[in-house]
Length: 111
Image (tube, rainbow, N blue to C red; front, side):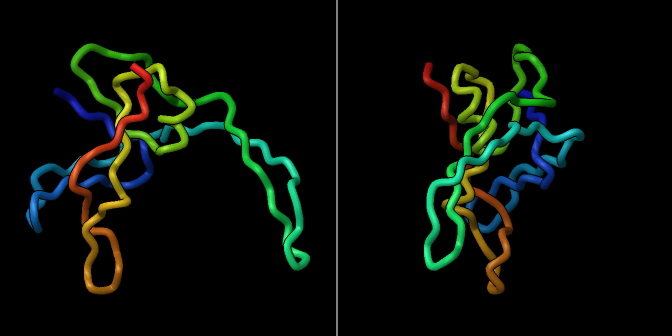
């Protein structure tokens, strides 16, 4: 399997505290266009609801290749089984709170 990292950050997969895979970013990063709708104000602070549109810089699916993308891109392209998102919710962090790596990936594929 081949991994292509379409995020702006290096992705490190950890087992315990050991890096077992490091995937450097490939430019340009895949992104989803965004629009914002005014929803409310809370104590004078605006609250918006985002909507996501067209995804840019995402190559077509290629046999044997997985693309590492942001959660927003993966959710916008739920029909794609080749999109993976770093599991930052379970990230391993150093003593200062910086992410060292993640234990694996998430998928948002409907298939």
